Image (cartoon, rainbow, N blue to C red; front, side, top):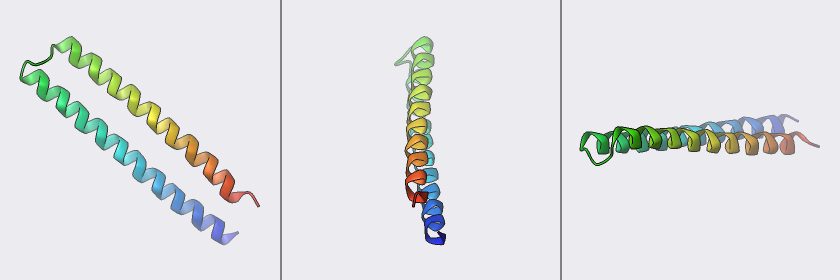
Amino acid sequence: EERRKDLVKQTKKIVEDARVSIRMARRDANEEVKKALKDKVVSEDEAKRSETEIQKSTDDYIKKVDAISDEKEKSIMTI
């Protein structure tokens, strides 16, 4: 039982690291969009659309990570 709880803690840490990585990728992508907008490579409408798509993708991946995490925690705690 105690070992299972330790494994769940490790799983939560890995999941949080994955979330941070996803957020960092979002930040990098948004910076690229802002740089392109500043350099007049894209229009403001395209920049807004890109940022919206980036946020949507970020949300989707975080939901996937959370779903996998929940499934794995249940699996670990099942005897």
